[in-house]
Length: 255
Image 1: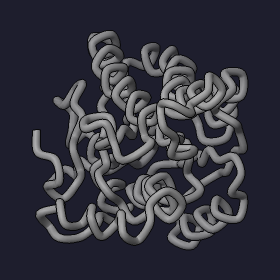
Image 2: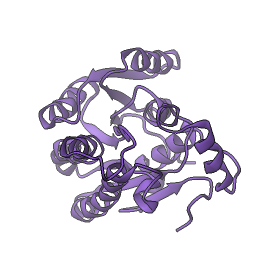
Image 3: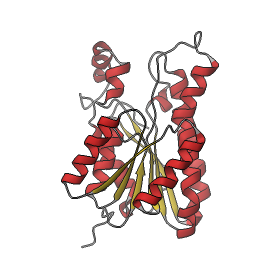
């Protein structure tokens, strides 16, 4: 029987791959046979740990440092990833952060631009750089990591972040329509409350307890539970799924 999840021979680039969802995704893609380039910025120790885990399982991974808030570095990341891992057939735009919780009364132009550049512009630029090769080969998969905040506005002080993630969901649909005729599929995942360093930084224990009260499964999610959905969307098992944003939130938000 054909294994539709087999990614052997594929080259993947995962941005924000040094921890959390990005790290779990890189590991999952490698375990399915892909050669993986790991985009990261600050967390060198984290990305080295991910590379060691992938290597210990017999996989192939290469770390590439880039600040994807900057267009020239984002483009260079895609180029260097292709040189290191091969023509990029899977792009996971995962880099992102709330940066800080901030009221609309206090947000500055610099605050706003930083959040937009990291969460939205980076995905646009990385996609723009990867698309020509995918179109030429008439195959490819782009998966954008959005957020439940892009659906419901997020928690306190998450205005810029939720706006950027809502924009990423719309960008996913627009790009999917443009690229589907060329054999390239674009989709997104929308995480709910996931046990990652994100919430260690931006959510108090009290906030987390309140989040759990609104999750029918009664717990927060694990990074691997996002990674497996991303791997599914990257694989031939999702060959007829285009322009979708899959909610992965334990039932917290049902659309």
